Length: 277
Image (cartoon, rainbow, N blue to C red; front, side, top):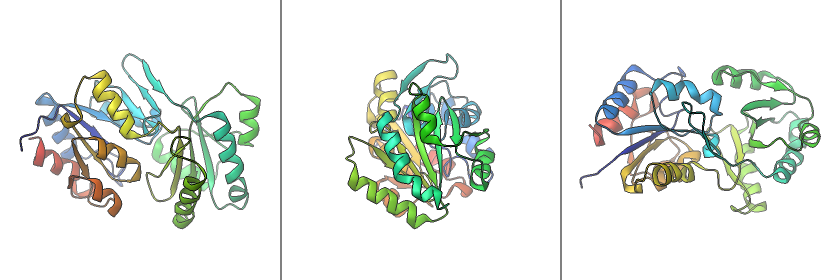
């Protein structure tokens, strides 16, 4: 069947950026070839906006950048903030209370994203490693709950908990999905050591739908999306053509129309060659 793809949406980590934390020359060349054919390219990521900017610039996208799983959609050129869907304040406080014993036992560390800045209780090794890959400087503020109480006007875009215990992360998501309905809270993970919480309407599927249908006047069958993890599932389901990376979890591959090679094997370039060139 001939496809009329007008928009290609790309995840960052595990999709266009692997171990090197850079876009490979082969993938970048494939993206440029797609753009030369008049197909627009957008970025949708769980990363914070300022951390994702260099990838957005590298692919020379003229479109808004969808960050924080789509909770924050902003055009870097015009600085227009199209959408910001922060966590409801009481939900952010409730999650901090729920996770506090685990943080006290050093089973995990908590990151709060406010005003596109990373706030943590203290800068530990996990935070240092995360900040180095993200290219940002975290702010150590002590008690996160107290910080929110003292600044009620500040809105939390995303809450992230990091733990090397992947079973703990999976268990947390399962337990909290039982406690809260999807209409109350969106929970996901972009890597197996991350627990990520955003506004219930903030997921990549909703963000890509907004970009395609509201801003670009496109149909879903004109959208191709490529991702590699659980936070990409809604996006892959929405797109007329959803591609999972070769090392994506089985549950993610199951919702895709095609499975590409891994990020280290330039899977995005292979997917572009298969469907768009």
